[in-house]
Image (cartoon, rainbow, N blue to C red; front, side, top):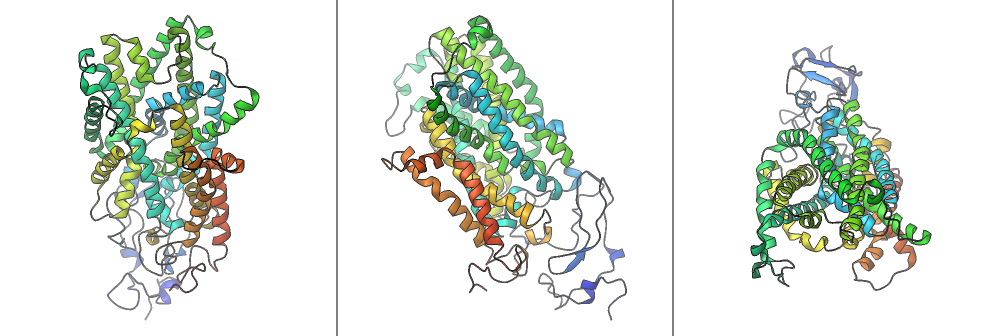
Length: 566
């Protein structure tokens, strides 16, 4: 006999694939289900059928204060191969990031050597200081849109990027975008660590720098002494990594004001030495109108690509936000801080032409030119702090979470971070930083072709296909009846859209790295706008392929693109 308190779905005795006690759903009185005490700024919505036709309230945690660490999904046990402590939804009691703390995170991310180097590279490529600032601010205003949109599900459901990707790419298919994001993070980790090693090299006695150990080895691409400094800095960062997300939060919070002070000191020095802003900003553009546009578009793409990696996995951080308001306010800090720090980078770089007679876009080389023990000590402190705050938050969290998602039983956040650091060495970052051309047009523009289509697919799925409504239980389930199982755990529509989004950029990339001697001009234009082309083409194609399904995102059977899959 079915109890009177049973919901319509329960009265139907729907089979539940996760229960082994019997062929039908075990009914438990709702009054016996433990409920934590919540105080929220939005109410429970009416009961709604969510995967397996189970009735449960849809909880939308916007701003919650909770006396329990339990997530409100009380009627399922996540598959242990898809979940561990780092992958489970963040409980309301751990959502402590305010708008100020998220903004502080961006200060720590923005104030760093790569950002300075990117700003200096624009001057090095021929732009005037105001053209460089306009390019950077415009790019980051564009990026703010996907940044806030991607952060929404993190705050709403408390899930990380690897879990969110399961909705669009499938339970197993999510490994594809997360590992691609992890790969770029490993490369950036190596670049940041190399810059930190250069700062240590700056402090070494002059006599040591003149020994045979400072001579470059052709097979290595750098000198043993520089590689040793790189290794020391590489190891030193791991102490902060092992403290996890809470350690990252505290590091960013207290480092932000220190970095702002040190940046102000550098700007003040160049102001005094150059004789005021008039002389600092006197370097005019070296580009004609046609030449400017040929530099502008790849530079715009490079600036978007610069933070496109973090925009993709920003919900790894917004899952800890107190509310949507906090995450949005915190994200607005990106274009503001990027514009301000870019001004410092461009002003100081432009002033080097007046002070030293040549443009010096590398801040490490600039500090070496300034000289002095006090300057060197302050430089090593400032550069190290800037690199560590950027590197850990931007380049460790996403790869570590991707590896945890790949094998939750073996990987923890700490183990994933260690492997990320090891892979960073394999990228040989000293080669990527050999020139402004290779840094901007090869590295930044090149990997934007990977980040763009992933972002387009994830956002198209979440906002248009799923309409922001996700089944938390199905995101942690291998059941073939789950909403995100698709075809054996892979959403073929997402994989096809990803590949098609990347392919048009490949010819231009091959020409840029020297593999192809010449390609049609159309492919050069596509490559220079790689992020835009891949983002919109992949997102649009994903929507088209998804609409071919009889029931998009909810199919319990095969994928129509693989009609014989069962």
